[in-house]
Image 1 (cartoon, helix red, strand yellow):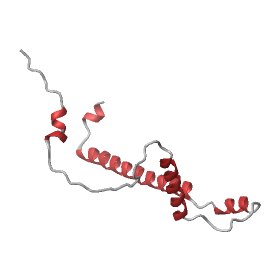
Image 2: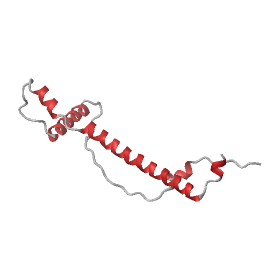
Image 3: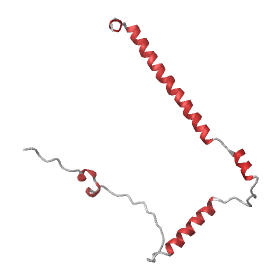
Image 4: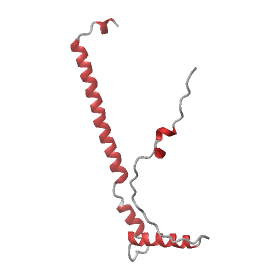
Length: 117
């Protein structure tokens, strides 16, 4: 404890510099570890997939995104047509800009603090 009390500015600055350099070195190391984990989990695994699919019959064509969207839309249309209420089933999205209103102000929803007497 006596040695710490007699430490001069040079020792304090050296310790601060060592601390800063250590923090930055650990951060750089952490960046490389995270990048390595990202590469590991997202790397291309086509050779394994090719070995598995080689025993199965090849598909004639791949399913496109438009075909998937059409299938989803058809399923939703069939589901909605089976509901008991018949509606137009047209979805319209309009952007509405709203001016300030006290009804949508959050400050009015807060509970008032009672006065102490």
